[in-house]
Image (cartoon, rainbow, N blue to C red; front, side, top):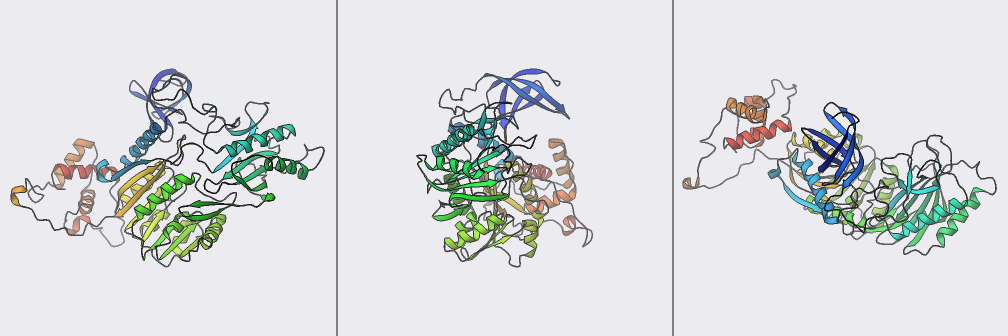
Amino acid sequence: MKKGDVIEGIVERVDFPNKGIIKVGEETLVVKNAIPGQKMRVRVSKKRKGKIEGQMLEIVEKASQELTEGVCPHFTRCGGCTYQSLPYDEQLKLKEEQARRLLDSVCPRDSYQWQGMKSSPISAGYRNKMEFSFGDEYKGGPLALGMHKRGSFYDIVTTEHCQIVHEDVCQILKETREYFVEREAPFYQKLQHTGYLRHLLVRRAVKTGEILVDLVTTTQLHWLEHGKEEDLLKGWQNRICRLSLGGRLAGILHTRNDTLADVVQNDHTDILWGQDFFYEELMGLRFKITPFSFFQTNTLGAEVLYETVRNYIGDTRGKVIFDLYSGTGTIAQILAPVAEQVVGVEIVAEAVAAARENTTMNGLDNCQFLEGDVLKVVDELEEKPDLLVLDPPRDGIHPKALPKIIRFGVERMVYVSCKPTSLVRDLEIFFQNGYWVEKACGVDMFPGTTGIESIVLLSKLHTKQNIEVELEMSEMDLTAAESKATYEEIKDYVLEHTGLKVSSLYIAQVKEKCGIIERVNYNQPKSENSRQPKCPLEKEVAIREALKHFRMI
């Protein structure tokens, strides 16, 4: 294959997050937004260093498992959902395969307990927050309000019938777009940096039904020849208030944002009507949520997620727990009722303030929330935790923070990840420092989309512990004492079966992890201050296989 070639092939599998794999002879072509089993025409767009990427031109044949009706009317044009055409059980199956494939790449499949991909209690209308963008679907087209068009940075698709939000949200979107079309209000154009309308933020609580609406605009008002911005916003506010909604409006806001970046940013927010917050309930606790504070976008799915975290962390009675990357303190407050103390660390000031306020509201006096970067704050903490909960942002834990977290030396920690590729990268560091995955699962927090939430319980290895086992000699085929391979035999086996070269030091380190007693000098650094290389995970797996072959473990 070369750049510009048009290839027709069948998608064999889809890797996280949305990388369709098509085999063409001995080569592999990667195409985005694919579903396993689809037959498609693809143009090769990039070929570099053995990696080949393509752009989908046409789906020649749908996959056999795809739905023929009941699919969102915006599907294929809207870039929000990739798996809308799959029945929900097929979505779960696909996501489980993706999560398991990634985890198995760093953990031998039989070394941990996999507990499956847990489903969201509802797969439609589940989102409690949406950020819609103003724009046009094509250059010079009418005002659009919705999601970015698939594969486009500029074009916007109006999504009045979005399937992953409540009907109330769709009504607010439709009324807002119609109102500003009538007023001929210009949207903000990213290249020219001109225009007024930027985003519409709608948050609707699933449990309480309370709704917060926030219109985000620039301060550019030269287009408003007659009248004032105050009158324009008052008219919009009245239109929203007159809607017949299933939920209850808590507040209508106006946020100004003049930044050049295409992000929802708060330069200043005014309350046009009501209040600038609403309440949501989660696992018996009540949370106050502001326009820009973090809260899981799937309330019912979050209950599944946090219940799993609580089960994984185990007995917390009398324990000190550190909740690193604590956000608005949801996990901390769920664990607090039984624990002795919970300390949360979060870099976003607004989230820390919300966490403290919610803790007071829920009557919890054993939670402490610290504002700052985990990388720096952990150095200042005097108390040592018994247990850890890690819930970092998408990019995972900062590489320099990982050693500091590991030095706490806790027996158990739970890692919650919204990006499994970041999770497996961080896991390798934990493995090299004496931790192993005891059990893991996925939680589908984002039905219809490519998103996957993963939960992993990490436990500390104790290779020095003695285990007494009584065995009758008649039951023994061949014991480890009778089966001793030399270091050279292990090296030869690894090289022959994997092509990897391993050192005696690496073999000694793996033997120690497996509880095999070694002579002291094998696994010691040459001097007290010298740095000793750690056995890479790939080589550790290969050495373990050799030890199994020689029946030493």
